Image 1 (cartoon, helix red, strand yellow):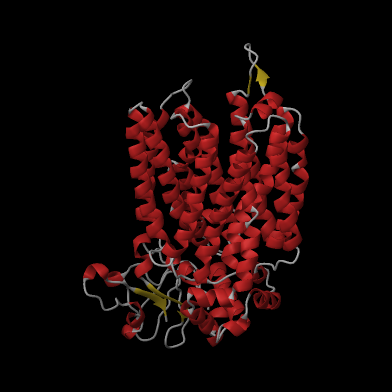
Image 2 (cartoon, one colour; image 1 turned 135 degrees about the vertical axis):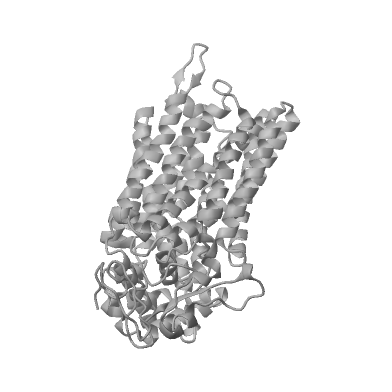
Length: 587
């Protein structure tokens, strides 16, 4: 049954009419008879515990962890380059001689090299959005790894700062691909309960890269020759070579195959990703049927898969949230974390001791990421992310207040507060962001939504690279720690945004999230609404338009003839009106 913009549907004897554009579900022939195996797949996924999920999806977990380890390279290099600006052998090779005989790399070249990586990453991120949709995750990953292996030669053998810049631009392209591909792949190869863990593992890989870089730099502090910076660059070859060898055997995402109409191949991939014998009632066929069902829902609501479609209809809201969530990583004062060594040295610590403390800083970040895995299954993603921002806002305010004082004790206190900031950041905003970005988008537009979100992050990262040195440098604004006031205010606005706009995706399947977004459910109501996306039929067999059937919640929900809808959309029994929750579904 097809509807037009002026068409009305009469359901049963109740004369309940639904007006609007073509009905989302009414146009989808697949929904005319709901199969039991799709319901079984949804029920099975909801009933899995985390431990059971790991047993069933242990092979999928392993592959996701492996591909995400490419992010270690990006974390490694993001720490390596700024540190080299203070390495005498590096500065002598690529810097300019001053009148007093010393060498320096100008501020403009420091900014250019740092921004060059970000520009390359922006290009790579957009390429990922095109390549994955056409060639899949596996082949895009393999091609990117080969490209990375080749372009590492450029900075390793470079003898001028211009060639070094070309190398960083080229390396930024695969870094951009890795950063978005790993996030999307992690959300598509495992079940709902494991999505947040695998997505936040990306943050753990980032922190591990920073930790390895700090340890490497600490080990080469005593060297004064060119190998003090060339060997750390050479170590970059370890990751792409080893990951490429394993990635050749990696399975493709079953969601990608479903979107390509290759359901039989998707079933075979699900068998590779799972151990069905570990979960009673698990069926690869039913699992793929559920994927196909979700894909049809999204096709009916938004048929296109271009970048423009990310800003149309219900996907506009989803894209906005994803872009904001990832941008907030650069808007909440995280640029401060890279300056802990600077403040410690100002307080009188030796370079060696400062690097030792930076190792502890990244170690705290790794512990915080692991802790976030436990918290997300109890508190939820929205709660951790939003109230994590509130705590970071307070820490930045304290840093700003301490910046007013000039004593060494106050500077040491700033360094200590930055260690605490790092821990809180890596419990909340750092890791949870990856889970939220992967879950906010529809499955058909996931890659492109993640691409847009990552590039918003990159753009604000470029802004940070430009303004942060000016805030800190004695030759510019010379705010020092007082810049904490600026970042605290910005972090507060981020908190307000998330409080009103960020929904809770905890324990939601992609199909359930599709329905909640299609109905315009307010962000703060997401966790209290019961959703049954498989109920798309009226009791008399008529097909309903789920995208236009209702707009309100609770008392505002519009019922269908003879209370049929009321049975599935009324409030649950609650002790107080404030804790009431509604049930959303179409029957």
